[in-house]
Amino acid sequence: MKEHADEEKESNTIAFSTVSKNTIRSYLAFIKMAILVEDPPNAVENNVSFEPFQWLDTEEIDTPRAISHLEQELKKFGVLFGRNNYKMFDVHKYDTLLSFEDEKSGSVSGGTDLLIAPYGIAIESVRKLSCVAFEFKTNVAVDQKELESFYYEAVMELIATNYHSDQMTLVVLTDLCTNNCILLTLTMESDKLAILKYSDVTLNQMAIFVHSHLQQNCFPIRSYRLPDSNEGLKESEIIMKAWKKARVTDITTSLEWEHFQEMLEDAPIGSKERAMIIRDHFRHHGFPESRYLNMFL
Image 1 (cartoon, rainbow, N blue to C red):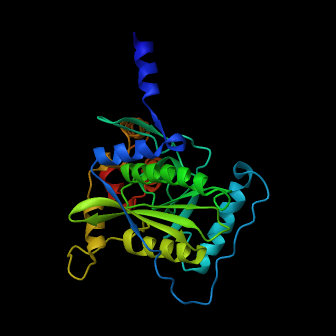
Image 2 (tube, one colour):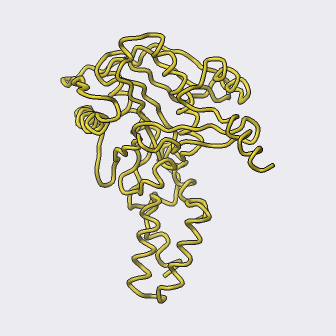
Image 3 (tube, rainbow, N blue to C red):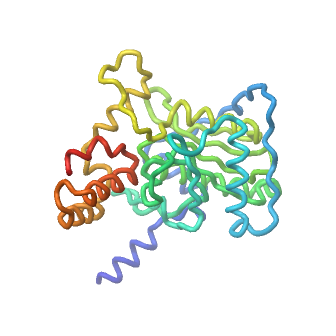
């Protein structure tokens, strides 16, 4: 009986890579979200240009090289990587990283190729703090019909990344070599959440948009405290303050929390070993460990 139930549940799973237009429409109608289409964002005049990437092998083999190239190009447009900023996480081998289960709509399964998230967090925590997802396709310039099927996959990635992440995510569908990127993000329309789609976006426009999104909508996890007063803070910073005040157990799974507690039991109170365990645990989850050091030391 249990095996039959498991098989039935698996058959009801929606895979990102095989999702159809009708499935997306039904799913969005069910969660009451519309897709709004807008013209590509205006490019800001500057002296830099995104150099197209040259795929030399299959997407699977060339993805690490593509990610390295993308990082160098985004740096030219002002995106900051490294300590106190962001990091690129190669997640293309994690096929079910963004999977989730909805009580009413069933299971949704899939992943993406690259996530941009705060520097200094562990790979296990990247989906919880992800800011930008990149879905690479090597032949989007060749077949428009193929591109449309990839687009619906990207829509599912947008829903999934925002399902998991504490930060608002942007999804970029691109081959990194032609000027027909698709950008997807969330917006508010008449007080309701909606998906905002930009088509035919150039590589330059994409890089500028990624930089803007990271600056306006996301936060690298820094080891500083925002002031107690909200006076003079941007709305996004006020939201960040509220987010940082979340209960400690909210930043990790129950299994990880139990493991953390077990490690503490074996480390003497006040010892360097205990302090190291605490620092490592909270750093990996994107929180400044100084907030919690005295709580558990």
